Amino acid sequence: MSKAITRFLSHDLEGHEPNEPVILFLHGYGADERDLPELMSFLPELAWISPRAPLPSPHDGFSWYQANELVNPTVEEASAATDSLWDWLDQQIPAESKIIVIGFSQGGLMATQLLRTRPERIQGTVILSGFMATGELPGDAELAKTKPRVIYTRGLEDQMIPKTSVSLLNSWLQTHTKAITKSYAALGHSVDSRVMADVADYVQGQLS
Image (cartoon, rainbow, N blue to C red; front, side):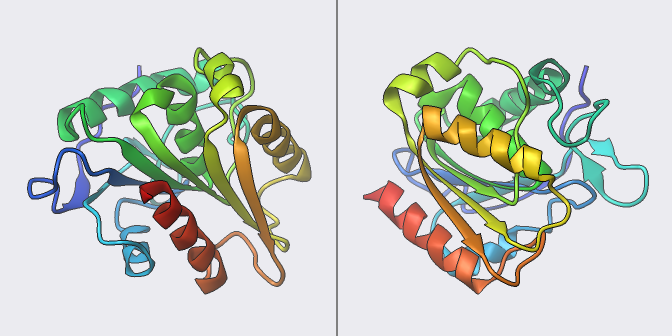
């Protein structure tokens, strides 16, 4: 069983209209809930929430799951973390509010997990320097039919995510989504203003 989420940051959750989406930030391995909310300076003014992953990583920061392979775990290895995250989200965000997920690296995997398990709750998916779990999930068949619009960004100098993982994610996105795929010269395992300009355009498009 995955541990429960106990800490998070949020803004305007109580004041937002139920028919408006909420942005969900999912940080990467070794980071915490403070890592991504500063990206709101690039994004439309929406309510947002940023949880801390529940498992301490071996050095600093936190991790969403434990697995034999940190990159590209199996869907079985990521299932407890996914279920725990959904349980927490159901307590924090009204059922009528859709979610725009923005996940970095390991958080990008968790973003795909949410999309692949309950696609009806997701209004947008942003995968920043991410990867995905191997295996089939219940939502995959529906996604292959509906093909929601997703954005996936990565730096061409990213040495953290293997090319095989990039290929696996790209292949899945091509068959299950209408993916906007962006790569950036002279960028490593990170985001910059170029990335966020494209992400802002995507998020604005999902609101239209």
